Amino acid sequence: MLAGEHLRKAFRRKVAVRDVSLCVNPGEVVGLLGPNGAGKTTTFEMLVGFLRPDAGAILLDGREITGLPVWQRARFGVSYLPQEISLFQKLTVEENLLIILESKRLPRTRMKELCDAYLARMGLAGMARQVAGTLSGGEKRRLEVARSLINQPRFFLLDEPFSGIDPKTVSEIQEMVVALRRDGIGVLLTDHNVRDALRITDRAYLIADGEILVEGTPKEILQHPESRSVYFGEKFHL
Image 1 (cartoon, helix red, strand yellow):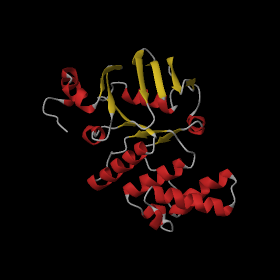
Image 2 (tube, rainbow, N blue to C red):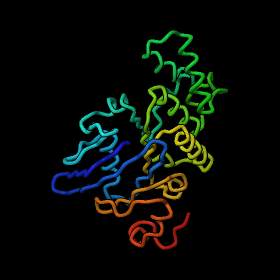
Image 3 (cartoon, helix red, strand yellow):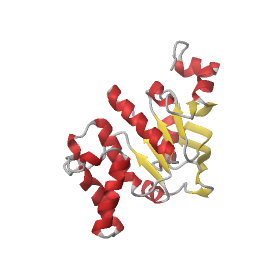
Image 4 (cartoon, helix red, strand yellow):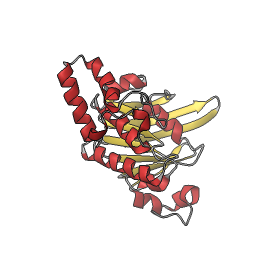
């Protein structure tokens, strides 16, 4: 389990997050939602490792990782995918994986086997020789995930995965997240495109004024009267 317990963060005299606790289980998709300025981004960045909480702790299977930077958390199985695509755009699809696999110091034949396996897992097997920069938005996301899978993550933290993309790519990313859940990987995502996020989440947390306002299934959150008044509005529906 990846968890944040009693997290607090202030910037100068302004408290952005106060006593926030949340968790993600393996094989579960969890949404982190909230209006602008509510503390959602601050909470997410503490879980990623960009910010250190003033109080509280980040735990991975009961082990405290609060002080670990992003790259060390990745070694323990917590993988972060930023909003912006972070591929080697001029390399081929398979070269993007092989450059990561080279750090494993494996025989060349084994590296090729693993590369082919990860590409097949993400539905990219037929694109191995294609230049990464020519892929569609959804294909690039799947390639990023394939690269991350090399380190055998147990949790993915996705920052605004549905931002600024077309409906077809949204659908591709949703399918990718569902596939990760099916493989037993826990996913925490934060996104302003609430409808797209809630359609694939098992649970969600709604943050308002630096605190958890409500937590539950998408249906439970939408039925909560305060969530309607603070965030969704009366006419919102999935």
